[in-house]
Length: 364
Image (cartoon, rainbow, N blue to C red):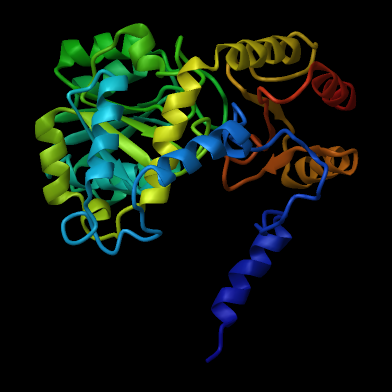
């Protein structure tokens, strides 16, 4: 069977310098690209904690089915109760990934006649969930309260406003307090993706919503970033949890996470709330990088952005840094809009001031 139609699209990507490729990091590289903000994915303490949990009770490497069939078990429900308590939520429902959680939530909750209004920089997983929804959807200019208000004035049915607490490609905070207040005045349901805030924002890494004492319809916390493992949780009311169990296709029609994955989630939540020194060191590195006099976006989070317009320009700069042992990755169009190509630099609690200094000197 001819596959010219595939090759044509791949050739076009190559000509645009935007062809994606899988790669394995060279050994010994200094990590400035992973989302392992607190180093838990590689932590000996994390490994020991997971091992202890697995030794304490029988476990299987596979859950053997979906949660509604053979795949539900006491441990996963214990984890949901723990997550709900830690995040001060009435209920919690675990999903296999942040992508699954966002697609499952947004595809089934808003109905025909409803309106979804989302920040234009919202994550692709939320956009995909919105595409599967029968509700009408509109974006608002990033963090633009006036534009959001204009969209809210024309919204119909049940209204849902979708934002990230920390934006994954720009590293800035949502104007959460103002957006929450606006949602309350319009009777809109606020949904916050806390993926890049979990573990690093708040006194115990609880996220921006809890730090500010905000009330919202639903929160999504993912575990593949600072939590250092895999999976995600949707937090909300008991009614929302029951609704998702009945209507969320990415929850219903997938094999549940196994015991080993749940042990990692529980182990991390036993560790990261008390990693205050790690968060303090991370904050120090963020200040060091932001005050270095580089042409960068303002950010108080581990995500730091150097704009380098043009795919080829960005690729070449990333390659130069990598040749110096600094694992920095290029973010290219179409992942970001044309002209907004960038180096997405991620700082970690295990990076040193000397390593950040070397990176800064190479960027000047």
